[in-house]
Length: 406
Image 1 (cartoon, rainbow, N blue to C red):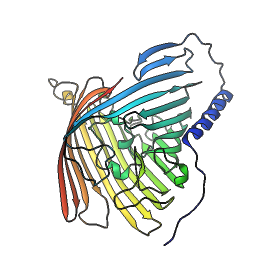
Image 2: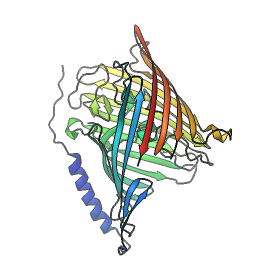
Image 3: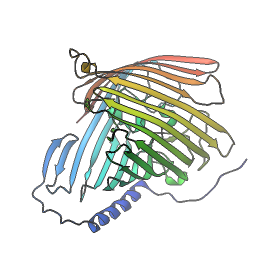
Image 4: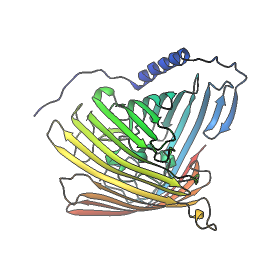
């Protein structure tokens, strides 16, 4: 049996961000072609992100916000549930997520930063810095949710359902330490395209970059109507002009992990804790999204390959989901404007070598928006079927959630 060994040094996220921040501060000063305005008095205020401070020059702006998500469910399931794990039938009411957020821009609007901390599970989720050279090119470094697929990029506070689909744990790349270039080409034209290309650590949230050679990721998104559809579910703004996208993304590389979540790197069922570079991962996703006058749609189709280089095992996974939502007050004026209904279907084949081994989800949801996604109530009903020959496990889930940002 072949053993994979190597020696390399890890790069801490904090050190990487500090070096990059210093570089951008020097660079932004070097390329400045306009004199900095004289301060005319900073002020604190409350804005759309929370408490904010503007120094009055337009160059320095900082905001601080928080979000809490309380949930009741008739089954004990978390967003990090391992696929196929047994589920407790006891109901629960808990603070499911609690986030502290800090963001803004420093020295000039082009240099932005963002951090997010989950105080429920004591996790540093995001810590990143971005410099926007132009619409065509931005460079980002730090830790954040990789721009691989829309459902995972969409914040948990901007979801249409109480939780993401059963597809997510199998295919998400999730949060990684990374360096990413992105931009938008052909702005406003029929060929309007957004792109992302970069290197991910392959070690998951908070992981040591010495744990993997890393993953390469590329995403091309065609904004076919010349407008960019933001990473947010539900057509809350009821756009008069239709906005949609078609995206294709791919990931390839080696890692000690076969799955990722907000907990960090982990393993899919059937795989053991790996050594550095033990698993070669290859993934592709085809995605569509669309919003117009209260109607919203999004869909993903996933393919994933896991090659165990140590034990010679290969596995192929397939999966996907489709969901649609509607504010029916756009059709029937007597219905309440804040009320939205949505449907979702999802399916996963976790191993193409095993017949009849599938996971399916059917979910109906309703939302009541008090202040967009910043203050809303969500109720969803799910029927989940897990087939693992010769057994079939079915469960019905009822979940009610209040998500509030302040």
